[in-house]
Length: 294
Image (tube, rainbow, N blue to C red; front, side, top):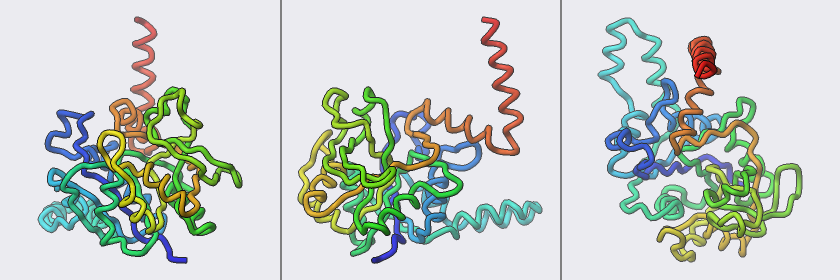
C-alpha cells in the first residue's frame, strides 16, 4: 500500500465573507495572532508525514506563494539588525515541505479544484485539507487520524463530526454503518441538505484522504449545486465502485471561514499562548465587569 505523502490544499476562493479585508489579501493569509491560517494547515500536514503540498490557487493568491518562498532580503535585514531568531522562523517556513502551485482558472467547486491537481498526484493516495478549517490536536493531527484509517482499509476516508441538525445545510452529510469506534462505512452522502431532508447529523469537515480513483469519479460526475463540481457528489459515485469510510476527527475545530469563527479562533489561540494568555484573561475579565454594569 502506497503511503500518503502528498496533500492538496484548495485556496482559489475570493473570501467574500471577509471583504474588504480580502480585497488584496488572501483569506488564508489572515493571521491567528501572528501566524497566518494557511501555515497552521500546512504544519498539520507536515506533522502527519506529508512532504509535498499542492496549492490549487488563483491569480489573486500570490501572497501565499511568497509566504512559503525564501525571503533573502528580509533575512539579510533581520541578520543585520541582530534578530537571528526571526531568520530561523521564516527560513523554517520555506523548508517545511516541497510546494507546488496550480492555477484553477475558473472557480467551479472543490471537486474541480482537486481534478486540476491530477497530473501532480498521479496514481497515489493523497490528502485534502481545506484552507479555512483548523483542527487542533497536539497528540495526533486531524489528517493523521484519517491516514491511520486509510492504512487499515486502503480506501478513501472522510473527516466527520456531529453538527446540530439545523446546520446540516452548511455541510456534506454522511449516513453510514459504524464498524468501530468513530469509524463508519459510508452508505450515502448528500451535499448541504435541508435539516428535514438530512439522513444524519454526521457532517464532512475539511479533511479527506482520497484514492486516485476519485479522479475518474469526478470526471463521471455532473455539475451539481451552485453549478459546481461537488466533491461530495463524486464521492457518492466512487462509493458505488469501492468502499468509502468516515472517521470522526478528535480535536478542537475552528471554522475560520466566517467572522465569528475567526474571532473565536484568535481568542482561543491567544488564551493558550504563554506570551498572550495573561493579557487575554485580564482583558476578558475587564470586559465582563463592564458588561455586568450595563
